[in-house]
Length: 214
Length: 319
Image 1 (cartoon, rainbow over the protein chains, first blue to last red):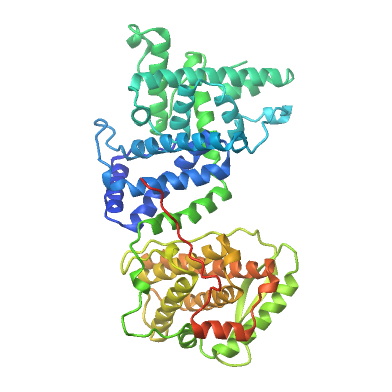
Image 2: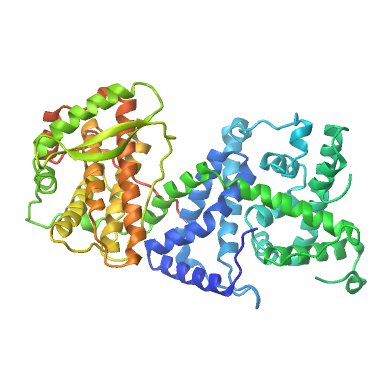
C-alpha cells in the first residue's frame, strides 16, 4: 500500500488542494499524480474493465476538481490530518455506483469482464508466489458487498482504516472487522484454489500464497 | 501492535481483527514486521494474504499502458482548471499575422523547406508501407539551401507507444489548451516557438515558463491528432510535423540559465519528439492525406488549418 502519511506529504497535499481551489493548474496535475493510480485501481476493482476504469478515474477526478472549492479540510485524528483522499474516494464510491446503474439500464454486456478467468494454471504457474489481479478480482467477487468494498478501498485505493471508514460512513471498528473477515475468507479461497488445482504442487507453493502450510 | 493478552476482553474474532489491522498499519508505514509463523500462524498468514492482495493491485498500475493513460489524462485534468484562452484572443482592431507570416519568421525559406519536407515525407511514407517501424528523427542536416533543413528519417523497430507530455505552467496566462481548435493550438505553438527561436538567435537563455508553454502547446496538438485523426486535415498534421521538427531543432540549441530549468527543457524535447512521431504515424495510416505544397501554403496563408473546424472540448462533469 502506498499511502504516504508523513506530515510533509499531508502539508503538500493540503497546499495542492488549496491551490487547486484557486485554479492553479500545476497543483491539479500534482494532485492527480498522487491519486491517479489509486483511483484507477479502485475503479478497476469495481468494474473489472480497464477501459471503463480509465474513463471512470478521469471522470471522478474531474468531478472532484469541479467541486473542490466546497471541500472542507477536517482532522481525522492526531496522526491523520488528511481527509482529501477520503473525500475523493467518497465521490468515487458514488460515481461508480451511478456507473453501474447506468450500465444496468444499458444491459448486462457492459459489465462483462474483459479478461478470461484463469482456471487452468499449471504447476509451474502455481509455484509462483504472486497472486494476479484477475485472481484477486475473481475471489473478491465471492465476498459480501461490504467486505468487497473494504478490500477495494484498503488494498486498491490504499486508504487506511480511518479514511476507509469515512468513505463508507462506518466506524473504524466495523471496518477492521470487515477487513478481517474479508482477508480471512480470501486466504481460505486462495488455499482452496491452490489445493484443488493440483495435488502435485509442492507444499511450499501453497504456503507461499497464504503464508501457511496447506 | 497489541499483544493477545491485551485483547482478552474482546471476542477472538474481534481481537484478531484488531491485531490484523494494527499489523497492517505498521507494515504500511514501512515498519518491518517481526511475525513468526510458528508463534502466531494465523496473524502471519492473514498479513501475508493481505500483502499479496495489495501487491497484486499495485502491479495493475505498474504497466506502460497505465503510464500512457496517466500522462494522457493529465492534460485534461490541467486543462479543466484553465480559464478561457485569453492568450490567443486577438487584440481588437489589430489584425494578427497569418500563420504563413509567422511560419516564415520562424522557418526561413519556408516554401522551399516545405517542398523538400513534403518530398521527404512522401518518400518516407511510401517506404514505411504497412510495416511496424516508426520513423524517428535521427539526424538533421542542411539540404540544398543554407536555411532549409530536412529531417533524415530512419526506420527503426521502435514500439509504437507515445508518452503525452504536459507541463504545468507557473507563470504567464493560463490557457485551456484542450478547449482550443487545432488552428489555435498550432497558432500558439508557432508563437511560442518563435519566442524560443528569437531568444536562441539573441544568445539568451530560455526559462521554464516558456518551455512549459511550448510543451503544452505541442502536447495539445499531438493529443488532438491522436484522439481525433478523422477530424483533422492532412495539411494541419503536416504543419504539426514540421513544427515538431523545428521545435526539436530549436530546443537542441536552447541555453538554460540554471539546472532547475533542465526538466522543463527535457519535457519540451520529449513532446517535440513525440509530436513528430505521431504526425508521421498519421500519414503512415492515412497516406491519401499527404497534402500538396499548394494546399499547405494556402492553408498557412489563410490561417485555416483544420478543414473540419473541429473543437476538442472536454466537458467536465457537473460536480
